[in-house]
Length: 146
Length: 103
Image (tube, rainbow over all chains, first blue to last red; front, side, top):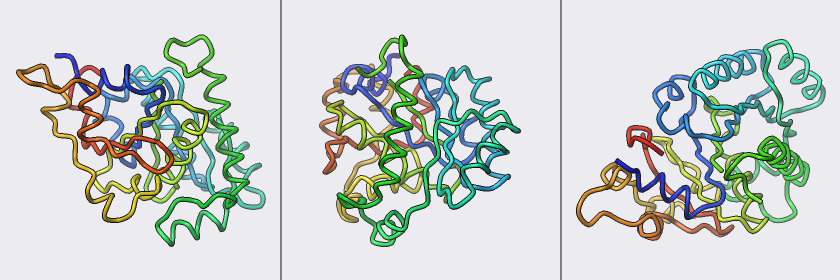
């Protein structure tokens, strides 16, 4: 049976972002929809456990047939960029980018609101970098946003 | 293009998902954001108020699978169940859409 949601994703949107339930266990139950993801981003915090988990997620995602899976290092403070790069290489996690820790994001989260214009510029810049990375990875792939 | 975002609780997955969505929307692309979390917080990160977030309907499985009499068109699905957020990103709340079959 054709899925109307699948049709909507194909015809009514240029980019569909799916915020999955947290955790590896949901990924394996989610094989149906995720199997059709063009790109999967695994968000990590600066801890060895987080990167190790990302490594396992990537192996599982590849087994599910998702072709492009990348890690994103989040909440990076002083020294974490090097930490992410080093440990991601160790656990075979390809990095799409690193997002710095930012007090503006923490504040916006406390208010339960959107990041206000002008706030969190380093984070916004990092996000743009990751979007550019993803777009570059999709060059030549059908359905990639122009 | 379908982009999946995963990560354990607390890593900033939802905040980043919203920022990715807004970045694409700012480039003029039609962006659909689907929150599949049983605790749906993407609405907040996309700028909806608590009341508006509560009002976003859960996509029924029958609508996702469809194919029966009087089923919705894709555009109708979005206009009925989608919430347009301040950054023009359309938000859907769909739990376990993965049971719905081919995407």
